[in-house]
Amino acid sequence: MAKSKTSYICQSCGAVSSRWAGKCESCEEWNTITQEVSEASIPKGMNGSKKGRRIDFVSLNDPSRTEYPRHVSGIEEFDRTVGGGLVPGSAALIGGDPGIGKSTLLLQAVCALSKKGVRCVYVSGEEAVDQVRMRAQRLGLGEAPVELASATNVRDILASVEGGERPVELLVIDSIQTMYIDNVESSPGTVTQVRTSAQEIIRHAKAKNMAVLFVGHVTKDGQIAGPRVLEHMVDTVLYFEGDRSHQFRILRSVKNRFGPTDEIGVFEMAGSGLVEVENPSEIFLSQRNQDVAGSAVLAALEGSRPMLVEVQALVAPSSLSSPRRSVIGWDPNRLAMIVAVLETRVGVQISSCDIFLNIAGGIRISEPAADLAVAAALISALQNNPLPAETVFFGEVGLAGEVRQVAQPDLRLKEATKLGFKEAIIPTIKKKGAQSAGPRKAAANEMRVSEIDHVQMLADLFSTNSAPKVCAA
Image (cartoon, rainbow, N blue to C red):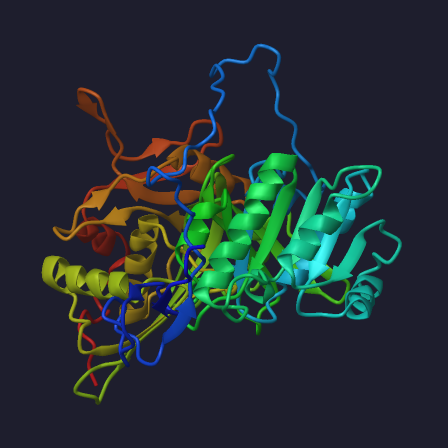
């Protein structure tokens, strides 16, 4: 019988070393390396290798299957994010900060699917069965035919879901960091246990054509805890985002083998649980003050969904040698780039100022199309000159000050027109063999569109002769 092998594994990045050290050489984290005993290797035969069984190959084209069914919960924001519904035999991983609402969202989705005839099993490794029942009663879901269990042993869970008159169609594991396999000599939550437990559950789920939803803890950096290979093993990776001081929550897809990535679903946390937000643009702009300098409306695109959000900027004189830069909901490095471009290419003296930037509503924007709206908000705040209330912005800004095209401009303009906006400042749209000229009408809604190709044109559109271009103390 093969002997077990002792190794030292970093609990932060999963790197394996032959000896213990105080600092991991891969991720440079301190005190994260622990001793673990790996699984015994495969026993070898007389000739030094074990012969495998023959695998049956099939054709790529299967005329008997033209459609592949999905489990549709009826919660449109959830179904959109996962690509139209859960695929049988798939594995999805959802992560998020503690208390953000991961378990609440999955419990609502599981109860909705169970009411449609899908056999669902909810296994909690963190809560007792009565605690899950209390949450279901509070959400008004106490009558849903969901099968509950409180367990952490993977072998016991897989043996239990094989029983019954009907096969289990959806299994929820809350959370994967609490699961363990008894023949692995490591504590639950370690890299070896998380990887081995997830691998065993996914293998069983694909063999039985059963969908699996994992809940994953996150680190202080917002990444899913445990080995990085866990995200490669599953078919879908979802992040549940939001500020607990705001009522809005964003379910974001960062990996999906059965649908588009970067798709989002918007929810509002209420007393009865998570409520879908059908028109997030209208909600995010409902408290906007139109007469304040430094406010610009961005026509963003998250996945296939256009969304209008307010970009707020505040520029103030600084008495510090290193002026402050505070950014909420956007990339701080990109703000530094926009400030440098405005100062170098436009002549706006802003680098010596304190700059505060906020994406209102608690949402986070990651696409480069926000560059133009941020630049407009900074110029407006510096000059104390409010921007036109019925104008939207989108476009990417390059280091030379050029304004570059972004994806799906017509979809963004359509969303802005639906909410009553009359003007849009967008990049110059270049066609094959020719360049479109100046302002033009939006295709179907008579919106006035101004096309610009440099940030200097943006500064000229909204500059005033009396307003200063220097942040003076």
